[in-house]
Image (cartoon, rainbow, N blue to C red; front, side, top):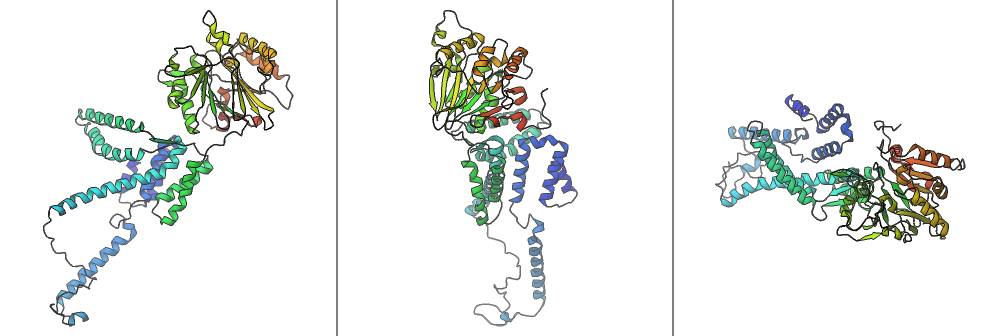
Length: 555
């Protein structure tokens, strides 16, 4: 891009800035079509366009404005007229009149058509010297403030769309970054080509700057998180930001303000009272299910840990919560296996207010310095007309003489929606990694207390990711789900879901009516799965809704 602009200038071409901008954009896209998917592409080109469009149209900088040629012509006319007057005895009418204390040949001060040679100014004093030194510096600071303010304003909608965040310290950071990078880091880095030790100085300058930026990012209210808006709201907001930034009359600029402010008040629609929305996140091999009611949110498990410095909480769940500006009320960790609690630390670090329920043992690293409610059968609560009931493990399971297997202690949670008349509507059953022995225990309790321990559910989170040790035929018949969701990794090493388990669900589907078949959903094919209790037929798979031609299609 810079090379092409330089070639244009060297060739003597003086194109209007929109032509140069569009051509540079096209060259970058032709060279790298995938750059259209990068946030930096849009942020950079929009920022440059805003700077061009809002540049101060001074005559000396914009030859196409016509002001510079007119001023030069007027100056030449004045000089020519003065030369004629100095060689001619002709006098203007007002010069033939005698004025007290004036020579008849003295030029009249009202003659503003002529450009007179300026008299040498008197020697400047200290105050004048200070003023002469300060004015360029103040003008530079003013220009920098103006440019960064305009860029911040114009890029605000784009930042919210791309990141779900608006940096409140970005203006200050850019004001410091422009001179530091321009005057310190870049010269040192370039000079290091010739004098190698200067690269160490450039690295030190960069390290100091990154430390300062990280400190600023940790300030209170450094970032304003907003929900990512739909395109029909983001597009007018972008137009409104550009209208506010462009050098237009203020009466027109104010028209863009409501469009921009709409981003700050918009919120994703919440489930109606008595209903809930369930999202099985695409986190690979593990469990992570987000349950939202009208005013509350629960996260069931937090997905796996991918490596020493990466986990599902950091990579998937935290961005997901930030994109919707979702405040967690409760985090339920079914058991201690890493594919269920691997991302919990990142989630808790982002939302330290969250109430933790789990079957983890006392002293577990995730519970250090935190209150923990041990989940056990019989617990229940109500959020916005939605009932949450814990069905497993029994309190006695924690008191076994030998340490129980973590899977056997999986917290089983049933979510039941209610209608306005108090009758039950749709329900979901989240079971963690229980195995057939625990499924049998649930069946016994359900038979003894059919109202308090009912297993019937419209949506079932398939036990243990479809392991062959779970999903017994008796358990599936008791639950009789309309939708079965498997959270498993693509080509995972455990072979989940096991072919035998898939066959059991296929056998179960034989008993369903043709107009209401059993829906089988797995995250390798579906991606994130969204299910709403008030309209279960409108469930969505992210890989289908957001399908692109470059996405891998799982066979």
